[in-house]
View 1 (cartoon, helix red, strand yellow):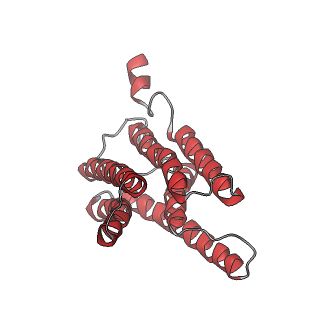
View 2: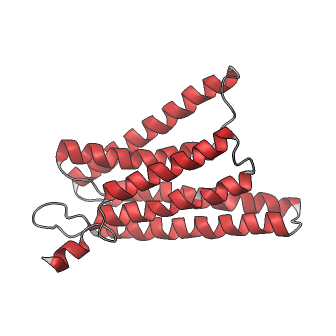
Length: 207
């Protein structure tokens, strides 16, 4: 029983715990940024590494949760998805750290600045690609439906936030929000979609 429990979740905690931690840390960074307590964008981006890192814990905890009472093993598509997300997240952390370090410590040519600024964004795009490949490669139609459902919920949340905040900003009622926040909301939306799957279908899904 103890061996089985150790395999569930991540560090003994389920995905709900890590999603909560990711949500709290994201909100904390957002409050610091919006309130002006932290004005330096580089510092804000460094703080965002914390919730970005917690995404790995969410994914690992969700993947280690048994799909049902028979503890169905993860499919090849899901195993590939985990590896792709891990690689993309690692590349994001490395390229962002490199960009921040060189920006603050070294005088970088303009062309190199563009390249360094694009690399973290491309790493995040790699996570989007991983989710898309999971939908294409997953042979179980039920799991594919759950994944599509999660991505639709995530897209609805992020696009709704972008639309509402954008109109508030155009009316000069709120401060400017950098576009990368909407990707963060999308990732958080995947967690919301996983909870919705769990409530309605009894399983978190593959993402």
